Amino acid sequence: MFPKVVQVVPMKDYTVYVYFEDGKIVCYDMKNMLDKEIFKPLKDISVFTDTCTVMNDTLAWDISGNRDACKCIDIDPDTLYELPYCKEKIA
Image (cartoon, rainbow, N blue to C red; front, top):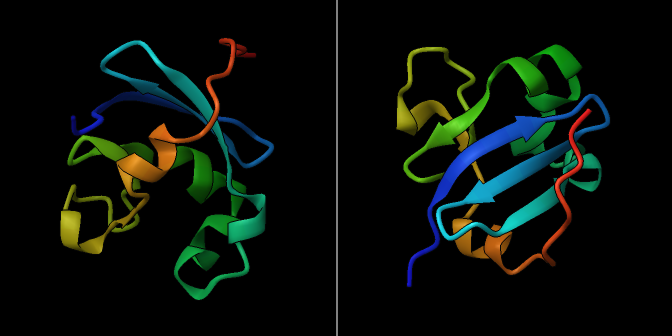
């Protein structure tokens, strides 16, 4: 089975709630990733929250703003899916 992300909700604390097609919900914490070169643009909280989206069935940040999958930052859906299930907690 290939896990498909259907919705993402970025939070101001650099976490993202990730909703999968089968109903699983995980909370992905990006704080430890922000010092890695590829993720540095996401240190700006506005970029983190405003560009967060679903692209190619996974969590992504559309940095270029033109929905170009080659110019986005994304996380492997298998990596996300293996995180523990979390209770929905928005707001």
